[in-house]
Amino acid sequence: MIPRTLEPILKELAGQYPVVTVTGPRQSGKTTLCRAVFSDKPYVNLERPDTREFAVSDPRGFLASYADGAILDEIQRAPQLVSYLQPLVDERKQPGQFILTGSQQFEVMTTITQSLAGRTALLKLLPLSIEELSGAGIKPETDTLLLTGFYPRIYDAGINPTQALGDYLETYVERDIRQLIAIKDLTLFDRFVRLCAGRVGQLVNLQSLGNDVGVSHTTARSWLTLLEASYVVFQLRPWHTNISKRQIKTPKLYFYDVGLASYLLGIEKESHVNRHPLRGNLFENMVVIEALKYRYHRGRRSNLYFWRDAKGNEVDLLIESGADIAAVEIKSGATISSDYFKGLRTLNSCLTSPASACALVYDGQERQQRSDVTVWRAMDVGEMMQSVE
Image (cartoon, rainbow, N blue to C red; front, side):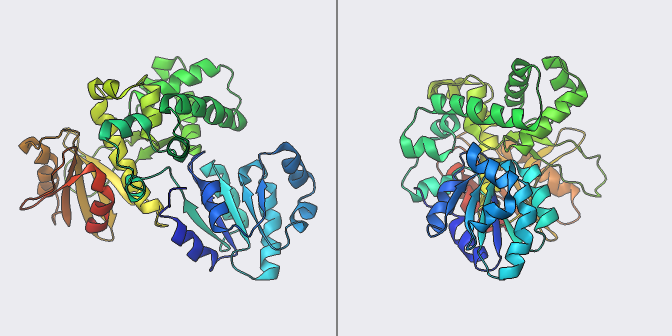
């Protein structure tokens, strides 16, 4: 098992709350991490039909079997249990009684916040980060990362990423979606997901997506919400300010795992990555999600945005920290060009006070400290996040 950044946070919060809830994409390592950290606790997989039937039909009897606590995996499969957990943990008044995991963020969060408000810590675990891979001595080239993605099983078992990601899409994504909503034509939904990959790093346009698939604007919105609920896609929100220029208020679309986006684009080899017209978008996707992992894997909420005005001036990533804003431009080129800094300068010219820090992340191998911008390598996103916060 590759050590996870979230582990010490998980241990710490289990010493403070009676319940800790860990959500994240399927196969992101939630179960492996929780079983490793809480090896003394019974493990209960609610995906098993017989276990789930017991939990749903007789929740009191089920929980009586685990009076000293347990790891309840994929809690969204038996959400009724959460209501019965509340009096149980209140009676015992001990930290770290139950560890819950879930892979459908909206359903799990709604259930948890209603029934366990103030009794559970909430954490998110995404697939492996570049800093976690580096810590384990794994340092692939950029094109390898864009092809392979970051799901732990691919690295632990040495599986061909194209095979693994294809299986992941059919086994988990499509099955989870069917559990959430009845989709009459799965072929249309599959096309929708692939078209989302074709728009990675772009502003969300539901009308265009719906038209291209042959479904209504409303259906496109519903399907996108389902993909977000299942931790497949991530929508980066625009940063709104009171500066004079009109701001774009539409989110940008990314995938939680860039390897899955590459697979959906039909990329099967590193040579395909290098020549693909969306390589720059995939690189941007990777860096944005690496910044998100930095936050989530330290038990923090997302404070990430992007900025774009009506004239098309843009900064790919803004990191909000109190009253301060750090601005980060992302470029997939390996050679720095003066044009790379245009968006940063435009943003600063619009602000009453300049950004607290300006950074450029690119695909080169050299760090630079310029007069007003720090240049970082893609492999150093974690270090960059630490420096700007």
